[in-house]
Image (cartoon, rainbow over all chains, first blue to last red; front, top):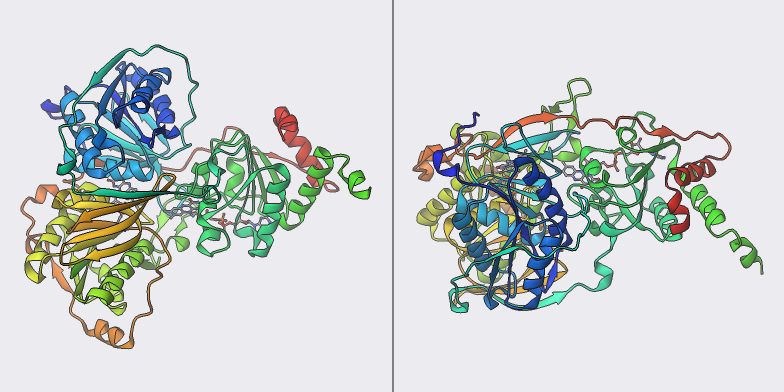
Length: 352
Length: 273
Ligand SMILES: Cc1cc2nc3c(=O)[nH]c(=O)nc-3n(C[C@H](O)[C@H](O)[C@H](O)COP(=O)(O)OP(=O)(O)OC[C@H]3O[C@@H](n4cnc5c(N)ncnc54)[C@H](O)[C@@H]3O)c2cc1C
Ligand SMILES: Cc1cc2nc3c(=O)[nH]c(=O)nc-3n(C[C@H](O)[C@H](O)[C@H](O)COP(=O)(O)OP(=O)(O)OC[C@H]3O[C@@H](n4cnc5c(N)ncnc54)[C@H](O)[C@@H]3O)c2cc1C
């Protein structure tokens, strides 16, 4: 395929990030995307705009103001009380009309339940390309968005372009991009756009919202230390060794996908492309081979420690510290050694 | 009720192997399965048929070999299977896929009665985009309920539905009008074991096969590679880190050596932990 951008798309300029606001809170993925979007906008020498859609009032307004502290040059704001809960119809209308009116060349959204629901609809309305779950966003020499994502099965990545349609749309999962530093800045231009929809126009009604109990939302994605196990552990009983080390370190525990598929561990603990992306200071992976779908979920960790019996395991290609060892022996030894190091007097205390 | 369930045949990913030398995916001989999430969608439709009667049509777009997955769906109890198969669909991205599927869904409505609900899985395990459901809904101009964990109730007479949708940090309980499209989450509704009678029927059943023209596709340029705005330009192996992992070796005290190495690399951790 060749790039032959039709004339009417040539006026599409600037990079947009959709700021996801649910029940008054901005999803952190939006600020992560602002960081990535800033990089793209600087390379293209264009503006970075935040798109804020939500109910009237302080929360929505604050989200727009806050966007400037994460690098926005301007913000588009659609606020209407019809938008107080996320619903596909109203949000799709707001975002589609903004795009058609102000014509961005790139539009980024978080790959959350909200972002994917919205992005799929908006891209279809606009008849443009949408690349899902990207792990790297870049611009080419000719200014095209190069969106890279893992391809299924193997240990491969593919780079996808939307050459001849605008905007070029992409979603990115939470924690894949680093959180940029927040820099106190005054708001610059805020463009207010009307929604043009009343409640009676919207067919779908939100009857209620049932928030998750705390227990259901593990803080895996945001943990400083994560210990995880894979198929190399051999049995669900052995997974206890992972949990014990995690508990001692005050860490979260996680696993590779096969353990979820086998029912050894619950799905909220899966790390990787179709699970959680993590960015801890320390990641310890035991008995995990390091397939690309796992790798993309952990590459943002500061220090990756891999325990594997196979010295040629792919995980050693991206781990920082490697130990060729049987996890069943090493994990308990590591737990004991950490305990001795971190709680040197614990043995004495138990003795008393 | 007439409900349509969209299913995709996918490689059984657990068994895919990468060629050790060329680094390409070896697809030959890889068994295929119905995308696992689509079975939750099918079970949801079967559950509604248990309660309200009616028919279920399963639909797939795929190469001739995808017939196998339709037959499998019939063994679970689907009433009718439609396969959209034509060379012009090859290379479709999600936008082109939803054009073809939405066109076929309209045609199914004309031939066998309009659909009350259209089901898809929440995503596939190969392309994994979760974009096809919302795309079909938009093209048909019907509402969408994505990431549905549970259909609470359907009021057939008043043409409304109530369902629980997973969202960030909780569950939205939504009420909307039929027809609409639902993308099903993995849930507790494991697919039922099909009845023997269904297995016998499935083996002999005639699969309805439509070319693009049969399905009523008017604009062939919206199909396949041509109709796909996304272009896969490069497939490559991820670069190895500049330096490979440092090997921690110690015959006597590997755990101790590893902890020393961790704190040497990240001194701050020792105080944080
Ligand atoms: C669309 C798609 C999405 C996917 N998403 C994800 C995802 O989000 N997350 C994910 O993790 N995977 C995902 N996968 C699966 C991925 O491709 C791999 O199959 C999976 O990560 C492998 O899991 P594993 O490393 O635990 O098992 P294996 O690949 O079987 O590796 C086990 C490892 O343990 C080692 N080992 C064996 N015995 C021991 C021992 N006693 N001590 C120490 N080491 C030992 C072995 O040498 C081996 O390296 C996805 C796949 C597809 C197709
Ligand atoms: C590795 C890889 C990466 C890709 N990345 C992208 C991308 O970023 N953007 C893009 O536009 N395309 C992409 N594609 C192409 C995309 O996979 C195809 O368009 C495919 O036909 C449908 O998308 P999906 O598998 O992601 O389905 P999803 O949107 O994840 O599927 C959701 C549901 O839609 C239904 N469904 C999907 N396909 C069919 C079908 N053929 N017949 C019947 N029902 C179906 C099923 O019920 C399924 O559960 C990619 C393909 C691969 C192999």
